Image 1 (cartoon, rainbow, N blue to C red):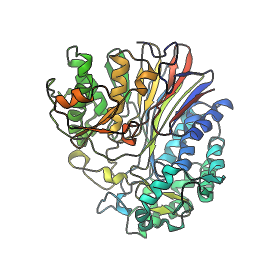
Image 2 (tube, helix red, strand yellow):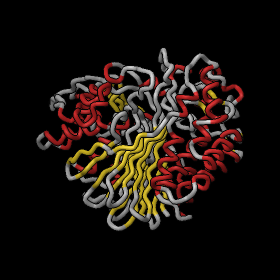
Image 3 (cartoon, one colour):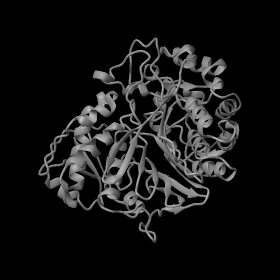
Length: 492
């Protein structure tokens, strides 16, 4: 296994070596925000928060103060920690929906920032949020992708009261200044979590939901706390993979890898088939991920000669990833999200944000809806300990996250590809009984012959994810990013 090739192994994105650290994120301006923190003496935590906050400004369809954040943190010589910045359903919840006021859980990202900053940061939170505040106050142009998403979800945003939002109805190229969001970020930087979960902000959040018939209360907001725990870990093919514990469905990746490790040597041309089958089998346990490590005892049935077509993974998506490493060896892998595009589409005018629709993640069984309960989350960042160092790896894509990570790990752990090759190679995604596959995938016809319902779609389509990776290899920080979407990486 060689994680970094001597020359650019991919014509798209090479692995970069740094001195003070590296940042990979879902947007180049978010990467710049993280770089700024590293250059002024900040840690990986400071850089991760700065990049995430920038994404909240740049990609409000994917993430924001109304959403959540999950992160895995590696500090040399210390146990890995998992920060669960997700919120619970309101205590007054009487019904749940996939959209609108009854789909909202308490936003967790702001408290998670405060926890991450306090435990691992070096800079004042206000300094860390400065790049995002500058971006929110700037006359930034609306991107084509954001304009398209705004147009597509116009009716939902209207129902959520977003007609007064500065982004509402904007077209590609329009310049927009998000002054309410800038002020909210400024308050959080100066006052911490109280500026969001208490006082006028909490009143505004509750009022925006209640006026539409929802039940989110100031009490729900004020009592919110992030969960800090140890991750789940699995050893496979010489790698040690750590994933976010429940309520994340990251354990499904552990299940697939654990089952893969029990199989005899598999021909390379069957790797994709096996990964698809194990993915679909693991997703049969999605509603029970609260069992955590106990799920690793379940065998995952597989037929090497044909597809079972179990289905399982869903089509929902939208998230943004950030991975950071610093000069002291810290590595952070994280994801931020409001779940679906613009989340619930419920708008909070005083803060200039929309709220998540994570309550739509409740299903049945152990994941059945209940007041004050967190639903199963798709966000599944990972840490990977290799023989050469530590990597933080994450990707957007909802149920596609586990699948994209599995394909990258297979490429590195079994096929010996370096990171650039592993990130650039063609991908598939199991979704609702179909196998979506990039048109250039070399095993497309072979998978069809095995009985998979193959649906070729454009290379780089959103559902194939956009991985970010940062870490340490040997004695230097490294960083890499997918070529898909607007994902970018840089070192300092």
